[in-house]
Figure 1 (cartoon, rainbow, N blue to C red):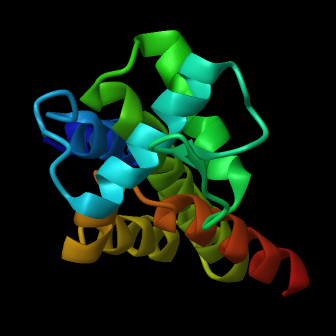
Figure 2: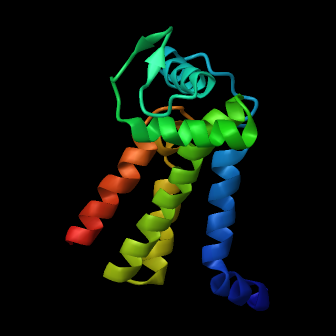
Length: 155
């Protein structure tokens, strides 16, 4: 048992990373895009891809500059890699969710110690809001990642 615990301590970052990846990616292909906000993002990116226009978001044939283009570029990249399905639409929010957990770990490690960093990352990665936002086709996880990165850099 002590050997197992020692091995887990040595590999805690890898185990935590694997757990977060499984948590945010599992089932993303089975979750239908039904929320009106999610469908707006996905449909806009799908229309941009069909038109071959990667600079002007459009929905139902009308230009729509409601949100920053970066999120649409994420969706376009995922659609080009995985096709235009639910998994592709949810891929980059999930990727940025994992990056948010790593960012939390990194910052807590810089401020405190490994144990605090590990607990901080686990607590952040298992909250209900995090779980929902990591699977939602909305800009929140991308925004949180970059906002936190700026705050960490400022600190």
